Structures are given as structure tokens and as C-alpha cells.
Image (cartoon, rainbow, N blue to C red; front, side):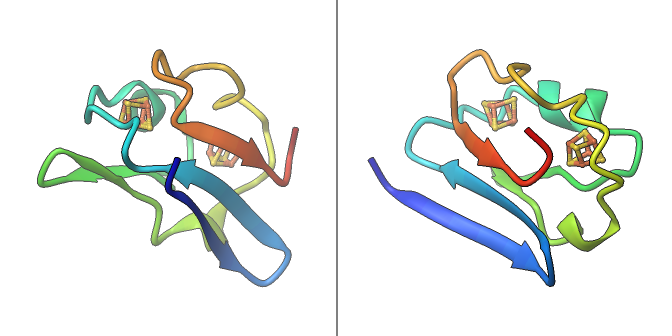
Length: 71
Ligand code: SF4
Ligand code: SF4
């Protein structure tokens, strides 16, 4: 496991990029475009715009999104 926390102030997401296959379900579900896929891997540089709607809870088929401030 390669756990990595991406954070901006009180907003954060823990991901394991080894598990991410770039499928993009997280990109599709997020209303604030917090997630992107770049070169086949999740990038969450815009996590600071998260509105904590929790729509991304459980959406990753590979469980690459490990934890999130809104869950
Ligand atoms: S984190 Fe999960 S849902 Fe998002 S791009 Fe990676 S594999 Fe797909
Ligand atoms: S909680 Fe909502 S706004 Fe925040 S990253 Fe997840 S889907 Fe996007």
C-alpha cells in the first residue's frame, strides 16, 4: 500500500495510487471537479474546492480512495 494524503486546509483525501487504474468513476461523480485522471492516475489537486457531499464515498471500484474528510 502506498497511502498518500492530499490536503488543503481542513479538506483532505487519502489515496493509494498503486490501486488506482484511472477508471475515472471518482471524476464522474464529483460535482466540484476535485478529481482528475492524469497519465492514468488520480490527481486531487483541487481537493480545496470540496463541498463534503460524500458522493465519492465507495465509488472507486478498486478502493483506491481510502478515506476522506467527509465520510
Ligand atoms: S481513484 Fe478509483 S475511481 Fe478514481 S480514477 Fe482511480 S481507480 Fe478510478
Ligand atoms: S466529497 Fe463530494 S465534493 Fe468532495 S471530493 Fe468527494 S465527491 Fe467531490
